[in-house]
Image (cartoon, rainbow, N blue to C red; front, side):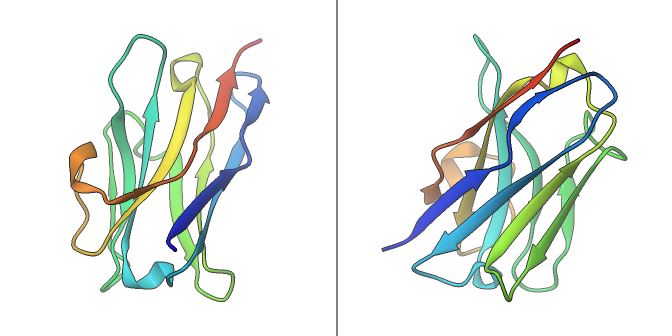
Length: 123
């Protein structure tokens, strides 16, 4: 059974950092494209970043480019989202998702989702 579990969310001040984790079970994450999405209250879920399965290529939303980093630890079967220079507008529930094809920025393209982790950026 394929499962994804996010962790690492919390409350942080503007300018601070958090590292989110997406742990997989039932499959090896390096065989899938892993995307990070977020959903703020009253807004649609949007793509943040993705790491591909084949060559580890990464993709970013313009809003987080240069501030967020995505990486994968195959030994731990985990994908990380390092978030630096956080802003109040980064506040959202963050989800990781998997699809056994190329990266995509579309929510509907992903087959498996985690339960989400809350990130709140506030002073």
